Length: 112
Length: 115
Image (cartoon, rainbow over all chains, first blue to last red; front, side, top):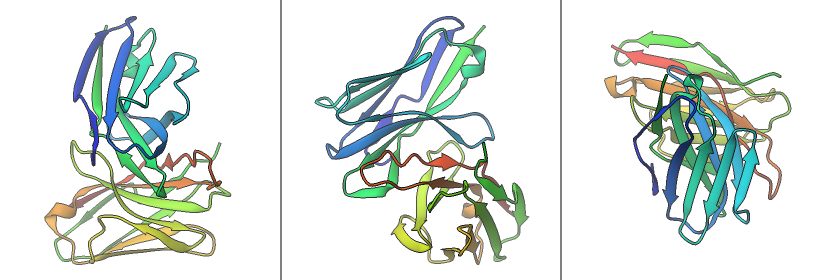
């Protein structure tokens, strides 16, 4: 994606924690989002974080934002095989509330 | 809860033909977005509409056009189709609030195959 980068693959065992990372370059980001895409399906919004927050927790999901380093992460606790999917981070910048800039996606493989 | 509806779900066209994709946003959402996702790629923003007016334009080819109607549904019209237009086309909708997260909710997509 345009200036939003993610590692391409992550493999974990069922029950472990997964951490998916994302870096972005534009300091004017206002909101950052995580989406999940299963094969052949649309993008499902998982969570988002406002840029003045450091952390947001939602059940098994924890989002960490380091604005200084422009680094965003998604931690999935107790990863299940149903979590296997591609995870996209996306940012929305201050100058354009319409446009989301997506990362290239991280394919999470959960082994039983 | 109602989601974004897209039709058709699958479409097969030949080169140089035209195609029309339809999107029905979540009720009361005022903004519609169109994205194109090639195999193994991230979604690329094409165009968006807010309150029936074009609000932003991304990497949409001149052969494509779109509009949002009075009932807020949107159509993406694609002409002179090329093999490279084969992709998943997503529509997303949101309810815009100043300073708010304006979460975009995606439809299931239309898979277009050009032969």
